Image (cartoon, rainbow, N blue to C red; front, side, top):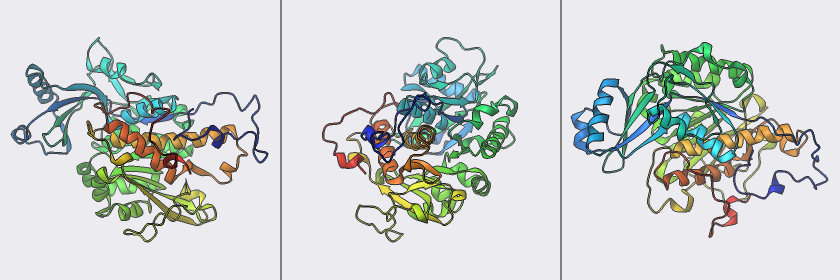
Length: 432
């Protein structure tokens, strides 16, 4: 497992330090640290359209919604003939995040979901597999007779993206098909609110079953909220679900507003921390916020200037590492904020997937914490049962940098890992 960010190796394994435990042959053996994700497997089909096109089909701009398979095929065929289809990419919020996680960590992840049983060269399922990292384990996917799902991504002239989902077999995952032991031994279980759109579907039942397994095994559950319209529709159900099962919530400012009714992102993060342990909140051109809980005994004050927004000196303890509420005697809410890396790309080529990329960085840090705990259990890094390996300040820098990479390319998934060296990048950006 690679470690998150760009810091000296000795920061992670200072084996010459007399205060630390040295490695022996046993703990040097490769560990099996991975994350599991349940996803509605989709292929994203990107189509530039006019605003008139959206009005004609009664598609609400900027939203994500379900359409019939026949309508999806008709639109796809028409746009294909017109030469308007700009690209076909493997998609799905969880699928994107798992791929990015494996690219960043060079470690395995496991995808759970459904895929077409009869895969042919050039079809959607074939393209999904070919464009997914080989580190993502697809062997636990449930084969189904129907074609896999499609997400028609309509790109308006202003860059806004509207998603029309053709379900196919994406909701057919049976609870009986879940690999219980794989979930129990994972570093985290990643799910999406999209799976709750139809709570009577096999996929929704499988997700509920999976989080029950994770909770019983003390595996952190990470929830990506999806789209604001869905969050508004399922608001009370999601809040109850988060309170009962979820450790980490990932969302953008629109989804945060739908969940909490609070416009200010910092106050929204504070509100969500009442029902979970950690929050990733992306705010577009204004960067991202991370909120977390930590026990007051191990809270670490920042060495950076203190900032006040809607919360006074909100970043006072941003050098703290995240903990679960259940592990805190006296939980304290801590926050950090970061502006876009280098002010953001000169040209933003793609906004689809930037939040998934940021979440992959967070998952990387959570998995690195488990990996290091297994390797060096007596390390001072584990004086408490921390959820994350790094401070929330350091995680924000890493998540910010990974988002920048996706914004700078056409694909919603990372095409490569982060470069080893970047000219002009100040060491202070990564140092802490």
